[in-house]
Image (cartoon, rainbow, N blue to C red):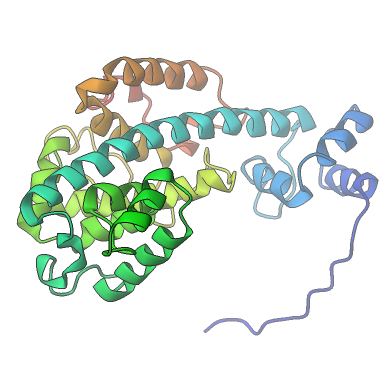
Length: 306
């Protein structure tokens, strides 16, 4: 049974009072001026999210925790989020291309507009008709030159050929399209990434969620995923190589696997992997930071990663 809701009674705090509140909870702040400048840059509640890994159950800071420790965690997360964003862009472009190519070959330029070419339930999150309507809205809003050209010249607008539509739809929309495809059709795409059709659908849904977190500058390094991906069921992912699917390491492995299947981005993927490893050499100063991120002690030897 849920607790009854109460009125919100917290009041506005000046930045100076915010610093004082942190000190009351045990945070060591030797340079108040610098701390105030930093809190003037990022919202106190964004900062408070980074404090969680440094606090006990009563929200008091662990012994000897400094403001610099929290600031470093924020900086670490900024670099990590950039690395996630970079990998997600490479994967998104790749999977958009593969989906357009595969579906267009099977059903022609406007096959995606016909519900019969998808699973009868389409996607568990949305009906096919709603998905098409959202795609029409995205087409009408688009300022891309290729969309403007199509709109002027062809009567099918706001429907676009699938190889154009996949460039206009959101990553979430692409995820829903993949989730709604017939299993055999989805398998053609999944095979390219050494995933099963079910796992591909789950992974694209998860990656769309992570992409949205990155777009809103949300904290990643110690986050427990709300939308967890299904993981492949093969020797590389089973015991003793099994990992939790609610932390960032599973996502890093999935992105690494998907990038490794595209020869065109081999150089970029190798450089990305090196920079992730470099970043993790100096994690935030919390007890067992590796476990906080869901990494096993021997994470660099994981068969998918290496």
